[in-house]
Image 1: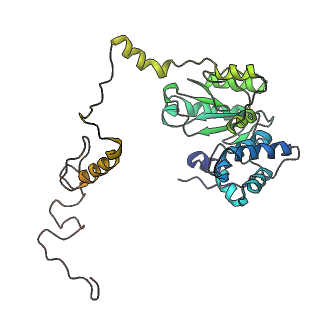
Image 2: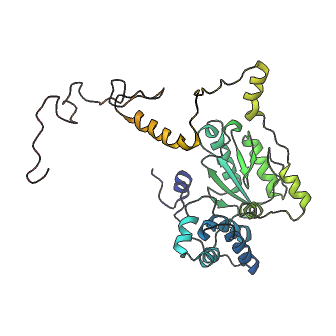
Length: 320
């Protein structure tokens, strides 16, 4: 990889951000006592306190828009960790931002399938429109733009998410229109999933709190309709054709619960023995149809050991 550590390109390729935490901006809202009480509420959910660190970092982002130095300190204090330990986690996961984000986070999938179908063209167009590159925020504070290595929605490619809500089967024109609407303060309905809020709102939800004060709004978000055509098309075709998957073969006598673990262990040991039949689709590496060595076909000509029948060399003096 040619990208330098800490660079936008390096972060996009590796998913690791080694850049330092930026100093807090002057207008950053402080973490209130309510934030600390909610952090303690998160901690109470876990039998081991440090397990609460991930949702606590989302909580910090819900208040301040990124993992600030103040947020790192709060997490460290409440969990009894060092700031270095908290920072190690915050720099590992790309969902934790190291600099202030915009009102919305726009993620463009540039992984293989999305890129082939236009994801990189979408990223380039939005970058030009906003005047930013990966993990940078537009001057008006409306949008933070980022590459996404994969959004796990290949059947909807190319995919763009806004605050982790999906906008499927995008092209340059539709993505530009989406971002323009966001900058005007509008919230276009996602293709599927909950209604759009903003980055701080979704961060609060990821922390385990509702981002909706109104219970009707919360219910509407849970029950939001979505288009699932590409995902379900295989099931629909199978139903139309009367097709179904074959049943899994079952043994006549299932082992009892008390002997099941021992039987499974014994079977695993037996199959590992040399000469035991391998499961379908697998072969032993030292058989003729296994992994071939690139040099020589006779024993001893590959440089990996003596020829068959050659005397075994004596061990060094004083060693067995």
